[in-house]
Length: 171
Image 1 (cartoon, rainbow, N blue to C red):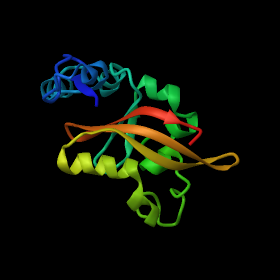
Image 2 (cartoon, one colour):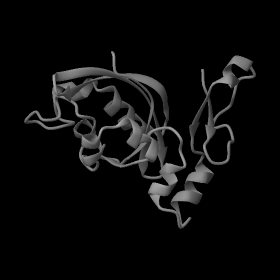
Image 3 (cartoon, rainbow, N blue to C red):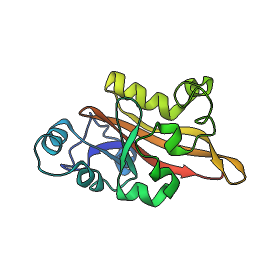
């Protein structure tokens, strides 16, 4: 189990266990106070806010469209993915089903998309998801590749932070 702490003030984001194994593994999010301070009149741009987070993070709107990516995300996403920011998530990640006539979010495959479901769950409930595995079939030069992402989601204001905790390209 991971201890979740605020990236900015380092305070725990929920009640923690006293088990020392629990405290060895830390993941980051943002507490309500820091979110309010950074998002409401801090004078900092949203990009600067995201770049303070060391893990790859995408800022996703309530319609499931990744709008911004921090510097760490630029290190793990391809230039083609980054050029699609503002499009639906499947189009940004390169999902093989995103080009179907129904478009991203409307195909039968979208109902079982872990990434989409995690973003929607956090959007609808305000509850974060932590380090969940998400198998995606992405378009590639050779046809498609199955990639296993581990992702976390967190609601910040009207947006969702989608953090990429790990990528296994040999899934």
